[in-house]
Length: 431
Ligand code: UDP
Image: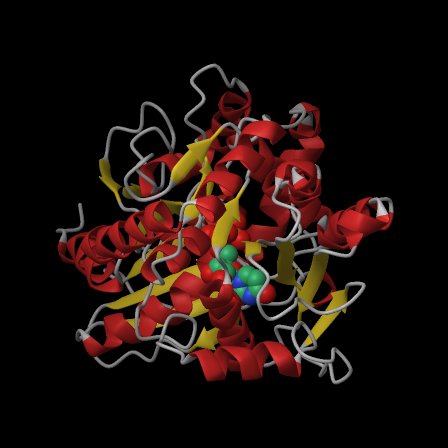
């Protein structure tokens, strides 16, 4: 057995006679699932559910393995680390004791929502105690020719015997051949959260000046580190991508689009400080790769590029900063090579931003090409830059796409819909 701490309660599930719903993932800060749970859980509590949130622990080797699984489900990477007995032993020995601990906190008839593959190995211990297990799969690929997900489904096959319900962002995501209940549940944003609340232009300016992205750049505070030659000029068009430092987000690839982006436009790449994130072992190295690519840029392009690393230590301030960046952006880009669902894109849609996104996975569900943004092939740097240029040069098109995007986000991707979707899971009779 691997020696790992028990799961940590982010919000303790206090039994009060009602059946409990407990969400489980691997981090309370950084990334879309943490973002989602911070908003979903209070809304579910307001809706009358007894809800808790636990975060499982893991070793660096465990998180390296689950990151491999994450990439394989996106159709990327080498499946070799999954083969051989060691991987299964590592995965299950980290999760088994935590599954027993969690099961002991709960009662028969309670529901546990396990988010993404990192937590699925808790299912057998929970099911053995009569706890209903929902597995919520936020990732996947729509590339029908990708073969790597099959390796993951084989690796995780024993766990699926103990799963009652699968929730997945798209019908193509999740285990093929799963015959029990299956729901398609795209993620959602909370329009009233600090990340999405209205901000005035003066508030946006003040926030971005405080971190040194605007203004004199002298007074950068501790909530951000910026690699830049100088601040973004007040009148410069701004192109933004917000992402974790993950190879599939292709921040380095965004830099390669620079030559085709109008010369007066500035590019801002923003992401969480990877040193503060425990469940994403690649973050530090990827940020360093992007920094190296930035340093190698010709002076004329480096001068209009800004790498912003945001601290997550004060989540409220971090959310306001993301909000301000998105509101200031003239174009929001998401050039992921694969993407289960980009919350960053829905956040930008809500703010009526014109969007350029890769035509992959969940992004192709979120953005309707030519109606709520422009979809591009992420491997075509010239095409990506061309779409950005088109929006920057056509303010009327940008305005129309942005306003249609906000309407579409309200129709499909607001929190109230997700709360109702989850209610169906909880209210379903337990078999
Ligand atoms: N995010 C954040 N602070 C940062 C960078 C990103 O809160 O410094 C948030 C971002 O606003 C979004 C989430 O992290 O809500 C990323 O979710 P997304 O679905 O786009 O990608 P994931 O990280 O889940 O792959």
